[in-house]
Image (cartoon, rainbow, N blue to C red; front, side):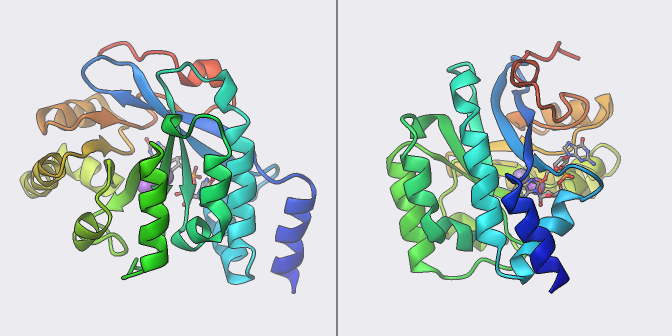
Length: 240
Ligand code: G
Ligand code: G
Ligand code: MN
Ligand code: NA
């Protein structure tokens, strides 16, 4: 139907542009990674477009196209900055391992597992993750604490990094209960040897709250907006 054609045309015309957003060490202000985010010309918003592509069976192809484009930027990134890409579990098990390992620097990559369905017991996925981790790819759980990413995921996928959803970050700056949950998840993450990222930091109060909670890294409009300029994405953020 119409959706299939729209997504197919997009893929035919080379797929999305890639913008990069820094993930910043909250103690040094240095970018430790940049997240590759797909941007489509015109008005197409990335979230709905990925959802539409998934519905018509082109999800893995669209994600893989975006990742291939992002990997082309790796050569321009400073050595200390990882390139972080997004993929749904079904994409991870559809040839992504070979693609990521075909780069000469898998230890400079991070893979964000993003899924809006719940991630279940999946031996193929767990095997793929083991292989990637064995080659130095950081494994990142996105949106921990939301519906699709329950705490049991921490035991199945021992992530290197966990990302706290913006709803927690927004809440913890103003509400004691949100702060308690956030600090608890951060303690659990650290207990498993993972680093913790606060997503969607927009205000100095949210930044201060993230620091006070012992969160390692931050991402958000306050620290750096997504940009197609690779150098700009890696500049240090002045301490606030
Ligand atoms: O950048 P923005 O907030 O508009 O993106 C909205 C959503 O689009 C993100 O939360 C994410 O779900 C999705 N998205 C953006 N870029 C990518 C990508 O490269 N791969 C995947 N799978 N999803 C992406
Ligand atoms: O689904 P995922 O967490 O990968 O998507 C991240 C999305 O969040 C990106 O598309 C990005 O545009 C968006 N984003 C990044 N920083 C901020 C922020 O400070 N506030 C809000 N609301 N969204 C942000
Ligand atoms: Mn993400
Ligand atoms: Na997220």
